[in-house]
Image (cartoon, rainbow, N blue to C red):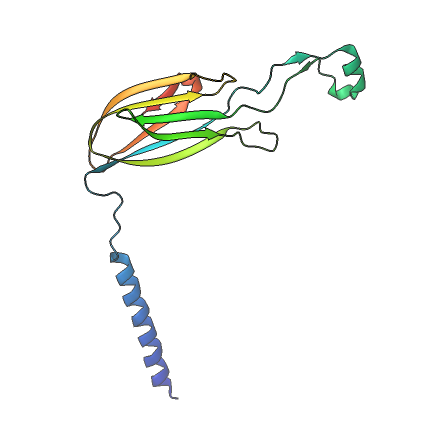
Length: 167
């Protein structure tokens, strides 16, 4: 096969490759969000309260420990599960029990949820329980928001800032 044929074959392969790149750069058309919809992004990372109370060790318990481990107060590392709910116009949209991360169950519980909703005014109610209580909630927030088409509305949680943050 001659050099000219090789160059012609190589040019044909490059042309096919260029056409494929051109096609996939414009099609299929990607739609981020359906027309008439907005997006609520609900996410946070939060460490709940410890599973148990701290307690003072007795002299006998301290003597059984290595000298460098003799802390007079013992606190459990594990954290309780977090229970969270999100309601939109009185209807439950998201409910979850989130377990703490980490080998000892002492890390933050994490979640991220995308919820497409119709545009318009909505009443959003979020609640979170991060303590050992059996019922009720430690944090609650209610907001009425007007969402426009294509909007990304975020709900975050920061306990030091008072709870839920709507942006």
